[in-house]
Image 1 (spheres, one colour):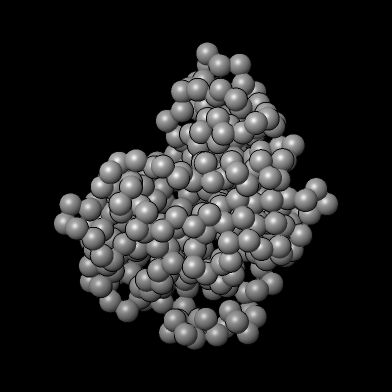
Image 2 (image 1 turned 135 degrees about the horizontal axis):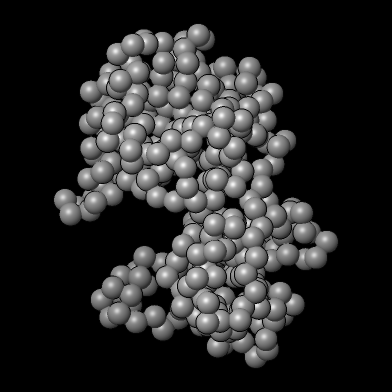
Length: 315
């Protein structure tokens, strides 16, 4: 939202989002007006969890800001089910765009003038879900800022410094994974393949970049999965680097230290931002065949496809 809004500064873009302690509730920066709604943990605990109600909802607070701004177009970013509540509080009807980047359970498009998705694959999913609706559904591919993600960073001082910080020798080959450390993203498949590779090659390094849940309850599947991944990596010794979550500003430098990027998802990625960021950074990509990635990766030309589930079985 931020990067697109910067390019729309002539149209007075406003972004309404959930606030955190790191940012002011209102701000005007780079030609964008930011409105951040703070939802405290106490509010969530008392009203949402204990009482099961939401008397001062995000939708209600957002609608008050919208009424004050009175925009011509409302662009909902990946929050389709929030639309009816927001519209119910408004005194007028703006043009409503629902921009979807994931496969959500949606059965209605009431009040929506246009649905945008990030791939033709995802558009077809929603055309099937909403076949009894008359809403227009179109695909607009995600893009990459090629000034930020580009091959020229490869031997930059910050890139070389990052390699040194991670204790990866200059001649070491880096296999990069970027994404949530979660089952659907398939890092377990990559780790099993890496275990086979390292028995034949000693100068390779696996770098895992992404949020990993290190604490949680024993019935928390995401926590248990993360714990298993950590244990597997520990058994592989010093050729694995688990980075955790990094800021968007640092991500281009992680691509710059990579020699190949792997996207081993075990579900159909609606688009796959990691793949195009890696490609823009000059990395060859190995990816699961499916979803939106089939629309821009040409097997054997600008990437290689694998069947992640079959690969997992045969590793």
